[in-house]
Amino acid sequence: MKNKFYQHESIIELVVLCSLFFLVLSIGFVTTQVGLTLSNISRAQQQGSFDFIPGLKIVAELPIGGRVNPSDSVYCLDDEDSEGCDNKSAFIIPKGTTGKLGPCGMVINQAHKIAPSLQRNRSDLLDSLNYPVENCKYKTDIYEEGYLPTHFIIDSYNLAGFHELSKNNPSHTLGKNLLIWWKSQPKGYKFVPYSTNSIYQYADGQQDLTGCVIFINQTSGVHVGIINSLQVVNQNGDGVLSILQAGVKYFIERYEVVGWKIKNLTLNPKEPNTVAGFGCKK
Image 1 (cartoon, rainbow, N blue to C red):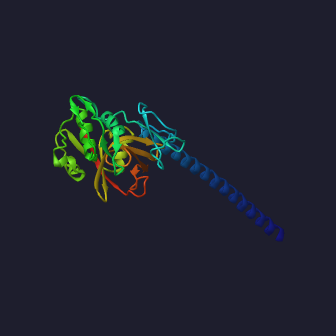
Image 2: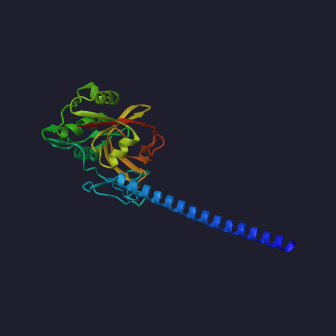
Image 3: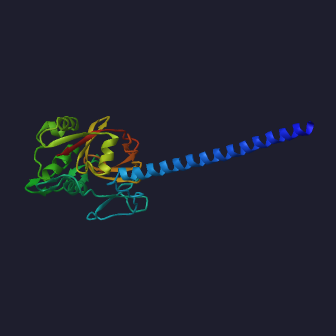
């Protein structure tokens, strides 16, 4: 009787062990399949992210180098010494080559003519022009001092053949007023509110902001400059936005972009700012 009982008990144990064995195999199979599925989803998402930005140009890393010539297709900027640019700590920034084309040329090309021609005055600001820049019967005139950031905008657009802006119009010569004017979107002009989407669309070619005006809210008022170029280093939207400007210490400035967002601080921590938006020509 006892032998039969023990035999019966052994059979039950064997059945239980076999059941556990097959249960472990089943769990392992399911886990493997789930892992493969997640892996495939991950790969598909990664592939999809690349397909989602077909026009995005990535520089992988920001180029660095030494001094460049004025005729070169790039600018050099050293965050610690913008006058130096003679060592490998300096950044090489490509000159913008796209944007709105006017009857007399591209806006950005006219900005390239003015910006390097700016001279420092006694207050160490680039608000002097020792000689006029002329194109298509429009001339910037000579400024011993007092060449405002808005003058740089007005002249760049007029040199390109767009004559709606004037240095005789108070609505155009004060940064705050120029922002109001552009927000009203007069005929032939448009205002692009700042957002991460606007930077994303600039990067993938949907909305070219090169040559557009950037409006920056500062403690001293609204500062303006002309967008030069955007260098994106990865698919996450990290990189550097550069602008050209007058009436400040350096005619070119770099703004760090993280996740398609322009950081609220320039690379100079003493100059806090926020971006209000962009003024463009239709």
